Length: 256
Image (cartoon, rainbow, N blue to C red; front, side, top):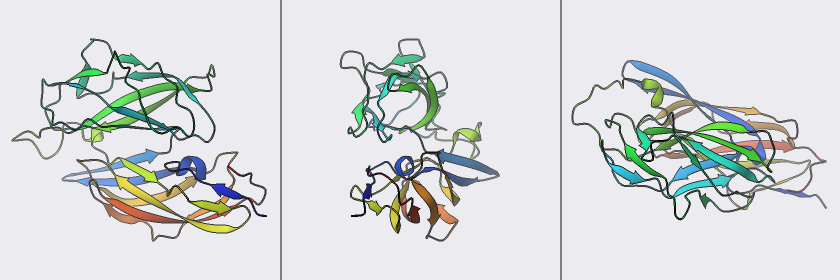
């Protein structure tokens, strides 16, 4: 019997392939390229209160979901030195996470019960994007990996401001991709997967989105091509769209 390749929810590019979405951000007088690349993890937060300059807040919950197929994320460290719009109230820039995230776990709050991530908002409201540098290893490996994550905060907009931000590179769409939990493919047979793209940015729309698969050496996929017409013309703030992919898998692929 032909084995099934079960694709885990939120895995998208990590189980299917490592992919790159390229979006062009258009603003008055400015045209930027923004990228949302696949990762070993997804970092999101659940803090929803509106912030203005000088406000203290606790970045909780701060969720990490492991998107690898079978690796444990260990030795996690969060560096807020490039946050720009917020600082740690402790005066430092690094928060050490005393948790490990196993593959297949639900999203885990990285806050320690007795030592939560306490911050102060120092932005003027013109930007809502906070950069977090995440260092970690897989399966306690000595190899330290580093990736940047973008978190979108709910900020109070200034009453008067220039329509073009002082640092336009900070304003980018933030696109995440998900697949249905029960999505599956048969080894050696062509099939289709529907991927939901959502722009979770509250400040920037994405335009002319292109799909470009990048295959890893261990990829079970022979070809991945969009069945949806490309490019995707527009994906507004907090908007979603469905991308249909035509996928051909290796007939010798293992179940997983």
